[in-house]
Amino acid sequence: MTTAKKRPNPPPQAKSRAQTANAAKASSTSTANQPRGAASRRGPQPPPKKKFPVLPVVFGVVALALIAAIMFSSSRSINDDETGEPTITGEVLAPFATGTEPASDEAVGTTPPTLSGEDFDGNSVVIDPADGTPKAVVFLAHWCPHCQAEVPRVQAWLDAGGGVEGVELMSVSTSMNSARTNYPPSEWLEGEGWTSPVLRDSASSDAYIAYGGGAFPYYVFLDAAGNVVRRSSGELDVATLETYMQEIAP
Picture (cartoon, rainbow, N blue to C red):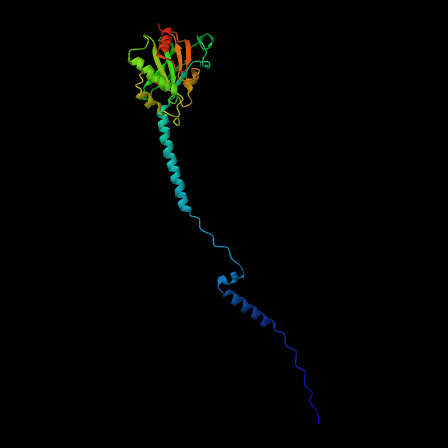
């Protein structure tokens, strides 16, 4: 009796190239069909970026610019009314040191420049040393406490019939600063009833500097020939002011 031999099982066949390609295609299709968030499950994702509110910021910047322009314009108009643009013609005086006596003042005997400008109402004011009239020219600063004491005292003297015949008292409003006290000077002098003609100095105090710029109140006394006879800085009592004005009287 013959025994049949068992055939060995054939080895597993390798997948064909076509099968492998089909499997890869199926895997890719499956991944593509997954929700977008599925791939992100592998790790934490950064939060979405917030959108910057562009329009509100733009409008805010424009509004601030308009407010600044309005404030600047308002401030500028006030300052333009208080300061002037005087014309200065002639040689400037040497700087004055407080306490200097006429004998040692190098400006004595010289002629200061002519000042041409306007008062607070826009009227013409000219301080001309060569016009033949002796003058006491006083430079006033609104923030100066000594000027604030000098103006009402001198005005009371004038109101009572004071002054020196033939001598003009001229004044210059200078060193304006809207950030300091007693501003604006136009209101201050008007409130004191100040009757002396007032020339508005420039924002850079050019007239004051041209006359030697001493401490306030600062006086320059000119004779009929237009020459400096005396300069004085600081408050003057009425008797002393009258004496100095009589020195230059015709």
